[in-house]
Image 1 (cartoon, rainbow, N blue to C red):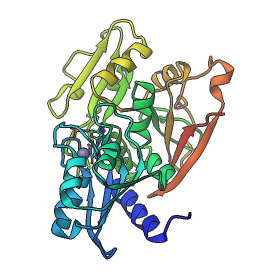
Image 2 (tube, protein in one colour):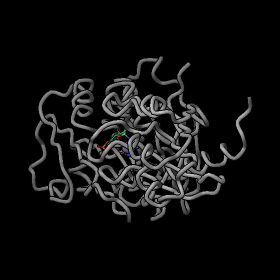
Image 3 (cartoon, rainbow, N blue to C red):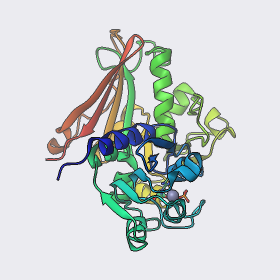
Length: 336
Ligand code: AOF
Ligand code: ZN
């Protein structure tokens, strides 16, 4: 039996809604409610971690018009009392007849909504446009599956792959549009990490300075030899800062960051830090902002001269987009 086109288009819209907001470390979730006659009566998405869930937002808009209708949700409705009450119960109370789910929730704390709804007599369908819904939510799903955050290496480079001018200046390689996209990536990941050399060289704030960010990303500093004084700008009170000192074991740290609630970390360099993540097999995605400039000297964005052979392979360009004068190239590790 093929899926009716009205189901496909409603779920497409729910997936488009799920892209909105910066819900990290929580999942991206979108929800569309249609009434008994099939007309759209409610839209919702989860705007930030701690905000009302997508289903609650859509149900609030639909009100009594949800009765006899269908709810399209990109992630299985939660079945737990977290920061908000269970969406499975809210859906039941609304009187919807049918719930269409793209992807089941791998979060053991919240899962079980599909079964609860079915047991209550609601018609539940699972898997519609699952691949597209999962791609929007790659970070959350990756973290749940691997017990660690998803790591994205980010760099702004010239045409020769370098990150700094001959005088060492690395601040303005790319233009304002690309820098804004970089700030969106920080908010999207929910955490930003740099090595101490980058803090000493650039004194960055590492904040997400764009509208719509409610939860400032956590700042993580790798400083094994305690070279930072605590007076640098990353130690201001704009966001939480985790200062890691002493011997560094990235696998142990990754598991610890996950336990502390992170699902993603944007690794902003420098070259040596990027190299450590690549070498440890902890580079899951790469975001390169390429400026149409030849810098001529200075280091490449990743120091990876001693990379063991299997790790250097297998990247796939999943997206590329013009950002003002510059280009953003998004890559994911290809699993074979
Ligand atoms: C969201 N937004 O729209 C949905 C979520 O942190 P809590 O208490 O709000 O619960 C988060 C869990 O709830 C989350 O990990 C996921 O399993 C489930 N669904 N979460 O933040 C939403 N529908
Ligand atoms: Zn919920």
